Image (cartoon, rainbow, N blue to C red; front, side, top):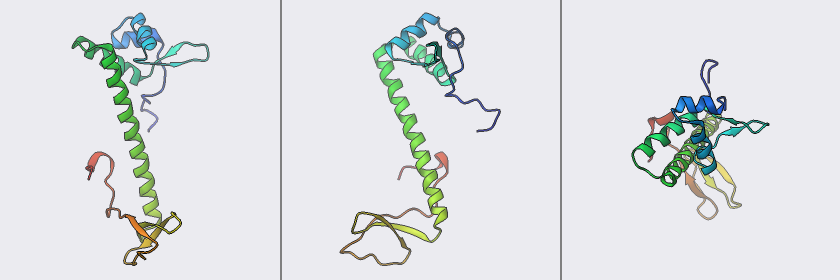
Length: 152
């Protein structure tokens, strides 16, 4: 992230500012916090602090509510969206770590589980002993970058 980008996770807005940005009354934000719908971070003194992502969630709650969706249903949607977001971040981290590992071992292309259960690297063209090793993964030649790849 560059210096001029805003981290959407950083809690910077007081409740009045967040309410204004979301087009809501501060009491609505307090209610959503009590319900666990949009839960802001807290300062050491206990004041609520909202991030850009929280404000986006508040706007989404307003849209869904205006469309007639119940608050428990909205809470479930937000919970699932947060889970998907966390999984996307985890996949991105794992892909990055895999790229780093592949870069460290340019000739290593096949992995196997050894007799002890340890993961071992096998050079391309090496025959696996069937009695003790099982090939568990063979990577594609190049990992896709970002959202370019498809789930195979």
